[in-house]
Image 1: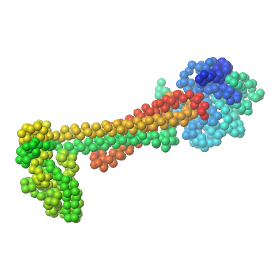
Image 2: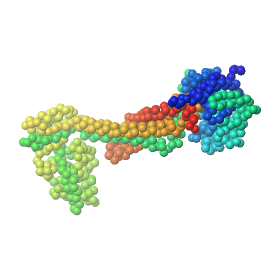
Image 3: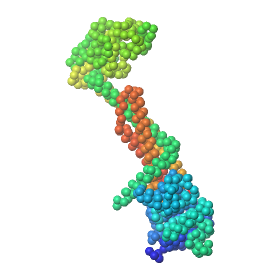
Length: 232
Length: 403
């Protein structure tokens, strides 16, 4: 597998049609990353970065172009096959952590495993391992509203990691956090990357993007290499 | 290959837990939603249980009266308006007949001392009735042939009458006024079982007197209604025909002078009335279930809209559309089942109370329970289908965008 990219996008275009109007959101995007890379996609709002993330995360498919993830062509898959790839390959982290308020931290972390059909005992074991990893093992029986924003985001990270995905996909992971907790979350990301986890992070914040090892910029749907972290 | 069913089972189990969480999380709304189903099922259960208990009691009273009775009602012709004592004796002597009981009833004003009671059921009977009815005489003596022939003013009174008129006094040997005539109380009616159709229709009589006395009080000399007890082993259809032939002769072969009703024909009529009532009420109950189903559908549609983000999130976490659909379907199914089971419990409670009040037998109808539970399961799945499908088809991007 060495040498072959983790994923490769070739001439990806995304066009939304809303009645008469067309929105050309992504224009001929070429992007590939290697296993173990830590990439951030930097762009202002409305630049198409969320659409790009949806396509990387197999939540959406491109209008044209080619996307190969872990050796698998994505364009031709149906909704169910996409769901299976998401379940196996991708760990999502959202801006507002998006925990289910009726479930405890542990149950929230178990959620992806439920849909993967993992038996309860194993689910529990893995969820607790992940909570341990993000330093929230003592909070396993707490509900999201009993935790701080930073803790909630760490639970969300544990949830993203629990299925052992090959890539972590984060959309503004510090957007709802203050600077200090934001830095803590970024520290956790760096640790995960050091362990060899591939990470793609979407942000509009230069400082946050700077934690990544490689930065690409996106403006009006056009992607450009932004050099490395040192330039940021 | 066994991997897939096992995974499905794990997910289903989790769906149940999550659905119950959601139902519990919206306690008031869930309760209001299931109310329709609850009332519908409760009505179905109470109805079927009560009706089957009622018809059970009915057929048991028919059985206790014995299949071997016929009831005859006489309209008469211009020349002959009823049956004379001689006619009755003649009929009683037939081979097919064991004996017969004339039914003469009055609604009377009964008085003693300073107290009185109107609209008391007074029933005229003959000796045969007393000889062939269990427990008819609680205390004292029965009405005998001498009373009958002399039109004696003697009576037996019910325990209710004793309470009304003879508080602290032994009634046997005392006098009582029935429609301003003095009667001697010779006995007290025992706790007898219903013995004739006439009794069942008019309720148990409060006072029994000789039928001859009753006829005289009515200013009549002819009997127009009586019950025939058949001799043992006689087929009621054959007996009915023999009786008809005999009575035709008595009425000079004029048409439509009397009707003979067999027990089984009464029972058939009762059954058809009961089943008509059941059908009608079942129709009403099914409307309640339909309304309940619409309530569930409404709540599920609201829930799907409210939980758009959650659905998007679950899809992002790898839930396939089918799993989302099953989860919402499970929720509406469980919601409906909770309503159904509560309805069954309340329906059984209600019919227990009804059976106590109406004095009929309480018998649990497993068919009715199965029907109630089955109906609510069907309603849950049927009306949950569209909302669940809507949830499963939500585009995860649109769903997540609204967060």
